[in-house]
Image (cartoon, rainbow, N blue to C red; front, side, top):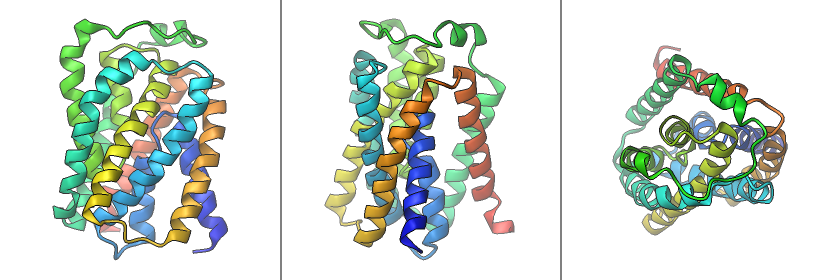
Length: 262
């Protein structure tokens, strides 16, 4: 594939993923499955997590400058997400590719349906459209549900190589009740921590069998796109961001689930 195409793919995925607080992994893995049909899932997820980590680093730096990351929530929940992501990454090599694709598509479709069926309360979303002040501490009463859900999210994210953010955003918005414009940047920061843990697991297992040039081009595009996505995120309503995420999940999930029939 031409170098320019790989850079554009990285930029698009990085920008869109950061815009909706999703890190880009849930977009990158399906693209890698199409571009490299003979490559085992463990290698593809290792590359995806590495790109996601770069993308999350770039996006988190901008969000930190904008003061839109809730570090107290991110710190507490990351203690659950990082081990879960590492455990999922360790099991990826044992999953056949066909089962991997079907499972990945099913997870995305389920999340898309949930977001369309139970969107955020529009009043809550609208009340915090321009909020930048971060709460001083997480809502401890909600952690009893958020922590086990975050462990599960981390496991699925590590298993599928998506970094966890699409699922984690739902935990932050629907369980912790963070405003969308804080939840998505906070999720992006959590992705950085969790994806780095998953990358270390794949590196230790020797799963990085991928060309340096394609990786560098995708990574450079993701870094650039993350900056664009972070800057644009404040100009789109919270409800609009949620709908963008649901649309992306629905489209990609259908593509993966229906792939054997196409």
